[in-house]
Length: 100
Image (tube, rainbow, N blue to C red):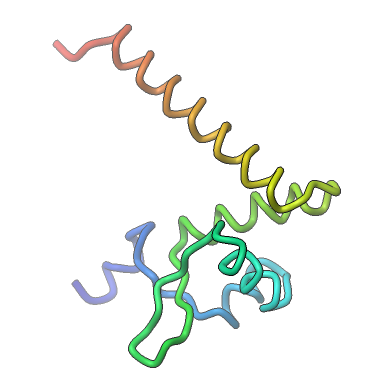
C-alpha cells in the first residue's frame, strides 16, 4: 500500500499533464490514443485520465512509430504483433527450460 504502489507497473499514478510532459507530447496525442481505442487510461473519480507506467511505455513505443511516419492503426498492429511474438518467445523458453 501507500508509496509502494508506485513500483506497480499497472498503478495509474500519472496524470495526463504529467504523462504528456514525460513523453514530450501534447495531451491531444494521449487523447487520440484513447479515442482510437489503443490506450485505455483509468479515470479518476473526477473523470480525469490517469496512466500507469506500463501505459506510458506503450505510448512511448507508439510515439516512436509515429515519428517514423507510421499511422495509428499500423502502429497498433505492429505493437500487438511485437507483444504476441515476445509472449510466444517467453513461452517457448519456459517449455525448453522447465523448472526442476
